[in-house]
Image 1: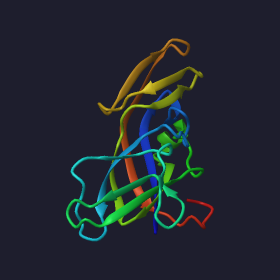
Image 2: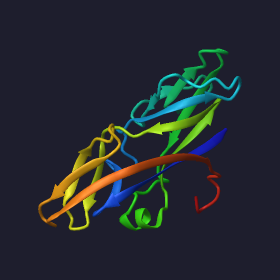
Image 3: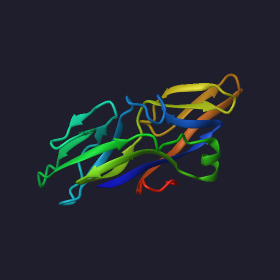
Length: 171
């Protein structure tokens, strides 16, 4: 079992608290990323989708959020999401180039790669205006904040997966 934390960062212009629309533990938010088989090294052609709301029973006991077979070697692997460890990307994080932890994935047989930003995000302006259902399929988001009388933008979105030890307090 290896736990991977998904970290995100972006350039936030006049925005803060960038996160999935329902919060960092939104059960309906779908994560899209490719998977690499730990047995043969094959990488999936398309992004796999995983969400907290989808639970599948495991053969021995418990549940997982994804069970998938490698197309090449046919070995089965699982991805189980572990909520409660994420936080939104703040304006301060963005200004200092920090990555915000978003979600932990317990991966057995696979390694997550290449997270794809899509729709279902939210952020708020520094003046408090809420922007819901932000779509980052095109990579950027730009809007005008009437209350703050300024432009707001999310650009240069990036992500990375890092192996984490959940027994440690600071991830």
